[in-house]
Image 1: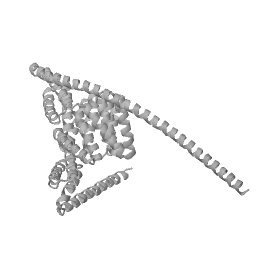
Image 2: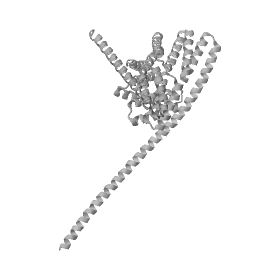
Image 3: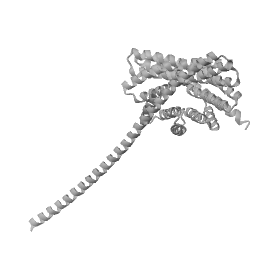
Image 4: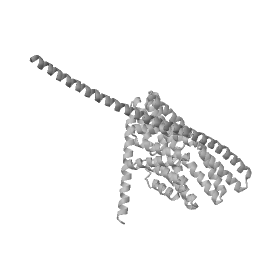
Length: 425
């Protein structure tokens, strides 16, 4: 066993070195192509470089996406312009620069529609749906996620199907429809396991959060640790790894283990800072504030909550901002600063009422949309049944006609034979 461990470590290191060499070779080849490319080819190669850096370096991915936009505009290449806007918007979404992500993903979505590019429509739709969900616009989120899922199914794009089903699970969890949420999660998990998908840690995190909201902390911890055990080779996986750390901290906070919670929150925040993950950073900062309030360290709580508000506003995370205001009110109240406590409670109350109103409207809209979809499914089922019955009737009539023709033909042959024999006599 003692001999096996160092050998195992050497094998892992060798694999990592081999992967790094392959990555370097890929990027060197792309830059070699770029240097000798014609103007019409530059946008294509720049998009490939940007897509490559999505996994390793956000700053470079943003830079080369912007370069691809300029190159595509120069040669009027709508396809590569759409791809460049999508790449830029996707990176901004991962970073938590949600306002800019919305602008660029919308541009990509519109161009993909003009080009009738189904995969582009699906990918941009799914990401826009996530932005609508962050802003509590659940009716729009459902519409765009459903559009994306239907196209991914049509194209048999398993990664897209897993992502869309996971996102729909999150959406329905936000709307307290836990049964439907869990159904989508398990469908996503089954497919992710079957295909060894890069989204497996994302689905594990989502299911863990489902159980955390249901206060089934052992189950939550089980799924969060599953997510944490997946090697974070790309920036997307590093973001999921950071989320798992934050989520494990939530479980320990909920079970009264403050020291363990702070340990995992610190690891999550360090990772968020290192990889510029603003969405997740705002949530982790809020969680620091909550736990310092519990521990009676109100100055520390205020410091973290103020930082959380700043990042959450930049990312347009309405629910997080609302929760920050409530916890800031609590901090000031316990310090005896009732003026500030009342001010933040009013901010919380106003924003909470706005969110609750939007959610109620969205729930009604979603209910109506689901009712229409269910009726359409019933109508389609009835139509399919009618078509099948009609085909059966047509087949029966066709069979009868064929039999009749055969009988008539046979009778004609017999009659002709009889007539010919009569003539011979």
